[in-house]
Image 1 (cartoon, rainbow, N blue to C red):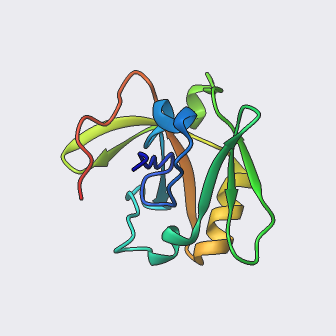
Image 2: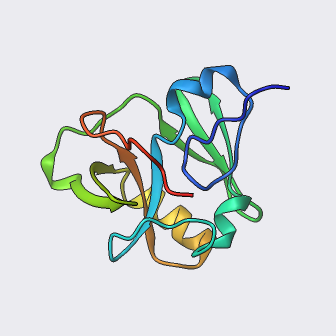
Image 3: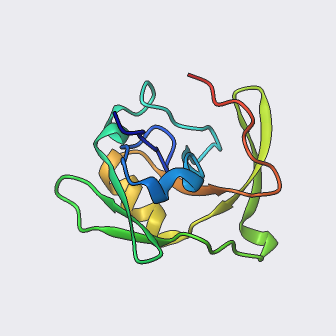
Length: 127
């Protein structure tokens, strides 16, 4: 049985071994800064993910694919935020307007794709 990795928390999984270091390195949050899980946003489960040529590739029914660079962390503090995931406050970096428009269009809720900043990884993800 192969392992399953979830690069974007609560979205689809991939069995690609190279996805292990990227397990739950991204998340989706609404405009209020609340982390969205499948209970709040069931369509997240329909977002398929894979790693290809240095990108996190997202696919969803009826959508063009979305590519997000794997190892780029924007050093502009204007796109860095703090938010709560479970009981932990973490820093996240916004992946930008194109990614936000893509995910918002698909899940039909205004939201953003955020990368967990390596300085404050999530120690325990809520179920």
